[in-house]
Image 1 (cartoon, rainbow, N blue to C red):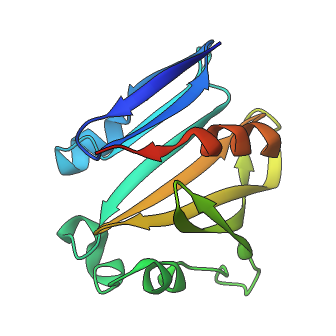
Image 2: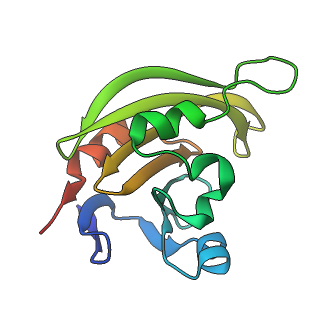
Length: 156
């Protein structure tokens, strides 16, 4: 049994495990005044998936990302190496989310529940003038992530 998360503002819905909750990211509301970021996760907050929706050309994107006109331009602007030249973001594959072309990257980042750095997925896709960014954390398996992504659909 899974719950349905429905977002009327951006016109989509998806399903997530019954023991998870949905919350609006306080960072999103504080910086933009809009509910453009939300988190689905377990009650302890250790494992979950964050969703961020960025409008292309928006002032909130800052001077670097604001110039992007589409998904490819946006992801090409993402930093891929640190100041020492170490790769921390790499392209993995192209997938489809709700009929939209999506780009699957892996990001080398600190995972609190594992107490170590790990390669974790970061998925990006575009609908109209919005870039969707999906970031799992904690003990989310690729299988569970794919299952959740398979339920994501745009509604009219």
